Image 1 (cartoon, helix red, strand yellow):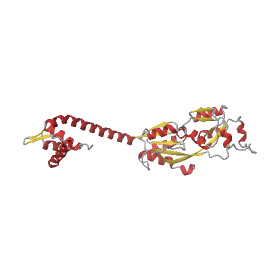
Image 2: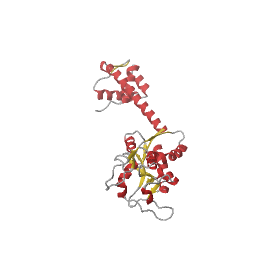
Image 3: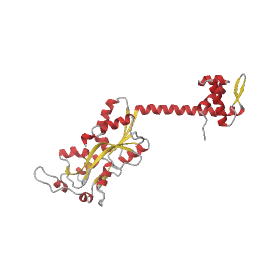
Image 4: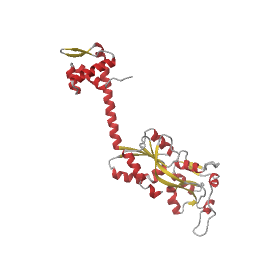
Amino acid sequence: MRWPDLAALELFVAVAEEGSLSAGARRVGMAQPNASRAMARLEQRLGVALLDRRTGGSRPTAAGAELVRQGQAVLQAARTLQDQAGALGTERRTRLRVGASLTVAEYLMPGWLTAFKRIHPDLQVELEVENSRHIFEQVAQGGADVGFVESPNIPAGLRRLVVAADRLAVVVAPDHPWARRAPPVTGAGAGPLTGADLASAALVVREPGSGTRMALERALRGYEQLKPALELRSNAAVRIAVTAGAGAAVLSDFAVRTAVERGELVEVPVAGLRLERRIRAVWKGGRVLDGTAGELVTLAGAGYTRIR
């Protein structure tokens, strides 16, 4: 279907309301010769005569009179569309919607956003914190302008860029049997764990859909993995459970570094497994992310070479 020209429709309504083609043309800012041609094209497009042109002016025909009200409604809807589009454009310039998986939100996002707000003090930043799977959904559906995740499994249709690096650490309580595998201050420990050791242990893990859980499952691909001892929805909950003796866990180094330094947890060495991962920004759209979302990604990735 070929839609009527909105400018010609606006002219038609103006002529009907003003009572002459010249007055209608003046109202919409159109030269009269152009107005005559525009009306002729509109009538041809609609297949009906709209105006009865007389010496004293122009009035709608019987058919035209029936269409004036619909034309007014169409124009009002078009104005509403433009107003809403303008409001959304303004909102996009003054608001940034960011999604972050839990590890990124807890340990990296505060520093990134603090630095970002120094550059854009008046920008409203909305941060949604969820697991990686949910952040992917938010970005794909337009609920977030950009997301930051540690999951290695990026869905098709989303752009991605590495902005930081992370390391997964195997940790246990000091009285756990695996704690003896950690090298003491002097001498040597009982040797590092293997992938088979981890796969055959009932671990305390994050919930399905979290980047930490996906990275662990990817590292242990090829091993038959024992059912977890516990599934918990936050790094803090996993850390507390391990400290209380619930078992071993594999968590981000960001999440356990302080507890290991305090002696609350012991990091156990692992051999033969790749327990490193990349933290990525994800977005939907063009290959290069522009606007304030792109600026945040650039800021977040500025220290990547140092972290790597």
